[in-house]
Every structure is written in C-alpha cells, then in structure tokens.
Amino acid sequence: MLETGEVAMNDTPRFSTTQKVLLSAAALGLAGAMAGLGTFATFTSSTSASQNVASGTVTIALGATGAQTNRLTVAASNIAAGDTIQRSVDLIDSGSIDLASVALTTTATTSSLLDTDTTNGLQMVIDRCSVAWTESGPPYTYTCGGTTSSVVASRAVIGASIAMSNLTSTTHGNTDHLRVTLTLPAGAPNTLQNQSSTIQYTFAGTQRNATSQ
Image (cartoon, rainbow, N blue to C red; front, side, top):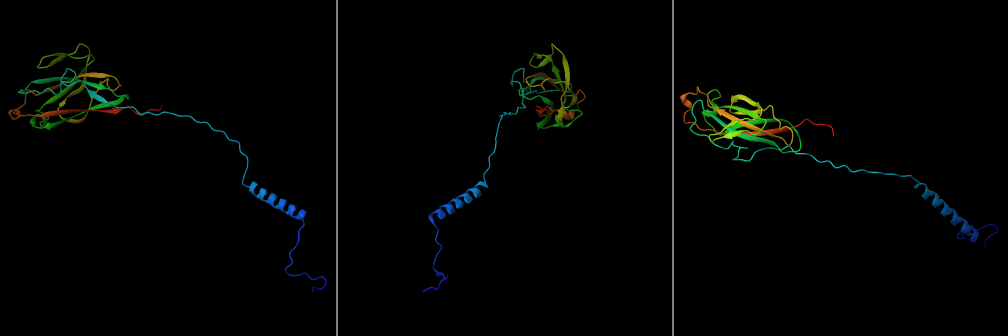
C-alpha cells in the first residue's frame, strides 16, 4: 500500500493524445529547421566558347633530283687547277610559316685535300637568279636571264651554318633558283692531284620571330 502522496518507482508519466500530437509536431518542426540550415537558394548563369589552335610547318626542300632543279648530285671528275664546276639547284619553302633565315652546312662524307686545304682546295660561290637559270651542257654552265644576286661569297667549300643572303625562299611558297660554283684555284699545287672528296650540302631553315596572333 502506498501512503498518500507517494508514487510508485515503476510508474511512467502518462500523456494524452493531444499532448502526443503536439510533441510530434514540435519534433518535426525542429528537424525541419535543422535541415534548413544546410540549404539556400542561388541564381546561376553560364556561357562558353571554343577556339581551334593549329601549328604551322617549317619545310624547305630542294628541286627534283637529276633535273635542272637539282644538279648537286652530278659528279665531276678529272678536274684540273683553275677548273670550275657549276650546278643548279632550286631551294623551295614549302611550309606554311615564314623563315627568319636559311643556313648552309657543307661536310665531306669522303674527305681529301680538296676539302681540307682551305686555301688551295675547292672554293665555293653561290648565286641566285630571279628567274630559272638557262642551262647549257653537260658540262653544265648557266646564264641568268633576270637579275643575279650573291647568296654566298667566295669561301672554302666546307663550313658550318654558312649564312645565305638575298633569298626569297624565307617567305613560304617561294622558290630560289641557285647556282653553286666550285673552283679549284689556279695555284693549286701538285699535292692536290689524284684527290677525291664527296661534298654534302645541308640547308637548314629557321622559323620567323614569334608574333602575337
């Protein structure tokens, strides 16, 4: 028996149906308020553009081998002191980018006093004609029906990165008509008899200066 005013320890509070509904509504409201803390409204906008970027080409070439456009592969034999050897060659800028310069490097894949003796050995001159050279021979000789310009002044045949001037082939699409002349000096001594060299010509183009596009 319980005395008046005492409550049994295992008794739990009793809630009416109305109280339960109010408590549930309060709990849902609290949960909604907490969820609302992580959401908000935004205005958005976007736009885009596409740009194609393509690189050009630096390409120099020689004319067709065996024709007047490239006689550099035609050999010469039994040359004597004072003889000259003339060969025509077209230098073509077939790329899409202009060039700042073209340089020539000559090497001897077979070497002798003809190329190692820089004074008495072969001397080289390169000229340009504003139109295609008029060819005679063989033995080949050339005359210019237009204007002749010096591309490489007289020098020893072998050299690295020899500057070439008065070229139009620095502009893409253009062709220069060149004549390469090798001369064995008239004063070449007897030591240059029975000598043989193979001269290789390598032309190298360098792109124009960078620009803003």
